[in-house]
Length: 191
Image (tube, rainbow, N blue to C red; front, side, top):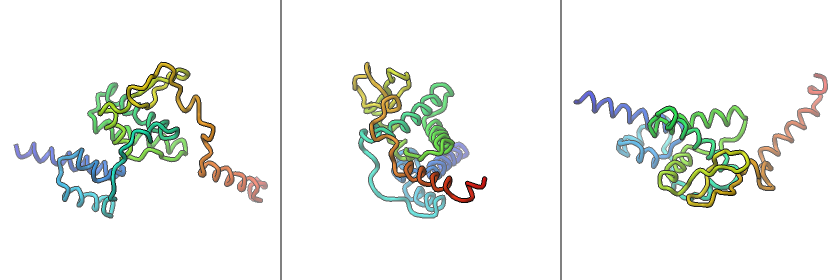
């Protein structure tokens, strides 16, 4: 019996470490593990080399509906569902793997990670609380995060119908400036 409880505790510690490494806040750790707050604080300091950040967790569903966060949230949540439904992963296993896959995909695309781990966790909780739903786009058939119980019969996603200012972020503008400068440099002209 003691070995079983030790094994469970080791699994809880590993879960906490995995979440901390991915950027989890203390409130997430307290909710998802059975470890004491003091133990989680020590683990956080050991893994991250600093105290956990303070402050409230995100609490509004509206952030997930805005253009870029919606695309990233939808990508993450669809991965999360596939891991649970098609691969039989338990909730937190699917959550960690989905977040890792989301982060890898964003890095592969050389894009900015819009969805932090805490927001991803909050997203899952909003779905579990029936505050959000997936709606199918009538143009591309993709499934996107939407407010729960909102009409979906004529839903068009932000990829098929981006807002007028879409893609005009500072980072994108700076990348264009950097490319233009690189192309104009004497070294580039010699190549």
